[in-house]
Length: 302
Image (tube, rainbow, N blue to C red; front, side, top):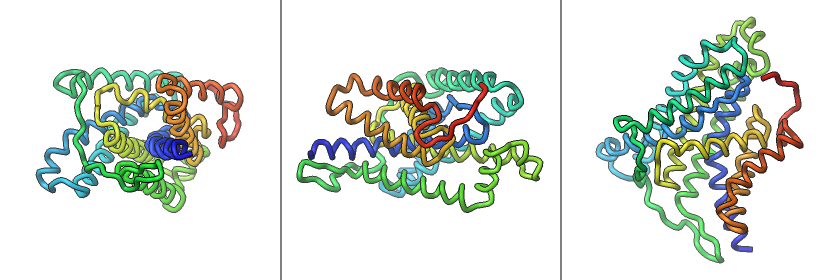
């Protein structure tokens, strides 16, 4: 029983990181109805922003929680701006083109970020060790269970950002505009909403959450490289589809489910099958409930 509970804790911790990435997928799909396959690579850039700004911030602020928060904020701002630039340069000129064109462009942007990142004077192809932002320690240990400080930080930061996102979406003017644009882009424009600004803000918000996820992920798995966003990005996409792409609570639910399923598979079956199980879930959900567990059915032309 203790081992089962430990796997649940590990899975929820991993799922909280996936949730921060999945929210970006689901928000962008909600307003533009396309999958931003470059989102996982924005996540990767977030990890490198933290890697490069840490020496300057630690020299100015010392080591500890204040520096960790500053690194987190820097990664969020950097990724947010990157998301806005990608939307402006790559997606906005194609907004009125067929969705397949935008989808192919998103794949192109993803490959551009991955392979540009491997150039020596950019990030380099080799693995780099992410700095220790906060020393790990055991917050709770006993009865066969262990809860580390890194897991507590992941839970606190992820849940705090999710609550902040809910406040922005449900209780602010820009959030109301985002919901209006997600319902009908054309009608929202006719009602006087600056849809370009709303879409840019959505990209900023989703990409900033990916930056936060990257910082938390790199704290837990401190080896980074330009291809590190591929698998977490795809798994977060699976989580968003499982919950119902376009549905914010669904993305969070799907992420916790995928994180727990992954750790249970690694703990009770074999680590070799953890990725296969995740993508097996994607196949099953697309076959039996393509709108996701919390999504609404509808006809979509791609």
